[in-house]
Image 1 (tube, rainbow, N blue to C red):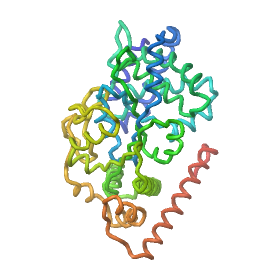
Image 2 (cartoon, rainbow, N blue to C red):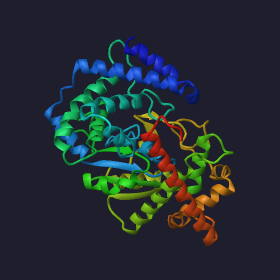
Image 3 (cartoon, rainbow, N blue to C red):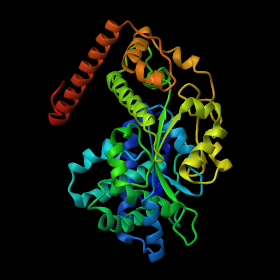
Image 4 (cartoon, one colour):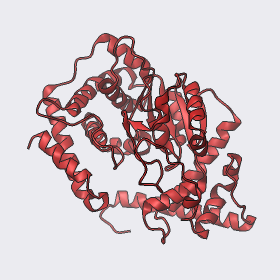
Length: 400
């Protein structure tokens, strides 16, 4: 079966409900990406010009990292930066330190390129499990933009590894970013491209590592009212009557994220920007201007419409699925808070009440003894969850 047929089969799976079609969709995505990669390997890497290479490495040294806890608004921030001509914005999460690093350790180094290449092909087809799909367009009998991306990655990979592999552990992500920029913006003479952007929730854990590897990086830390973050997780779980399965991990991540935000705001830096999600919704134009000033780029109208590779994106809220793509959802937070139980509110308040208050989010205080007890309980449960997770990785065939 050729890649056009495989692509059509995958597209049909993407349009169906994700939960019921997950296994079939993954199988179709793997078959398609493997076929694309094999054709690209047969064609060989793209030929890169010397001036393209030098401009690309100048851009590579100036990343923008967007992070914050899951469901804090990081995707919206990325999508508002997406179509700016001075930025090449990766359309899906980089997740190098939070996910891929573990997978790469299990692979031979010679297998890294194909593994990441096929993974990113699937992400370009389906970046966040909802429309828009097929970010580079559709393949046809005349050619495929995904084969072009794979060939570009094959060209950039050895160059990035040779120049940066000895001192930058995240060099595989740079190769991905350069291949994507090459296929979408290009590295032509007099190009306006200045920086590349990637977002990965919880990357605030790796700020020291990111700044050490990228001295010219810009860091955008997104925070949101902790009740809204937790309520969004609960809505995403689609079962409001039961505790979240990973609630202790969510609370732990929120605790670390708000702590890091407080720490960074006490010691201001030209490379770090704290962005409150609520401020972004209340004054989008003003926040866009702040972002542009922070990044050293021109404020443009495109920064007011969320897109991915120029395609308008769907609602920025878990509580509004009927919104027009490309428009911000500014619904009041009361609907989000309403899904939280008393237990939810108490546990969130116990874990992040103090630090959230210093960021402008006032939560009802708990009695000191109850607060201490709940924090100890959440931490103990989180440790137990992590031990069970590690055990299942070591002995995957055994039941917990």
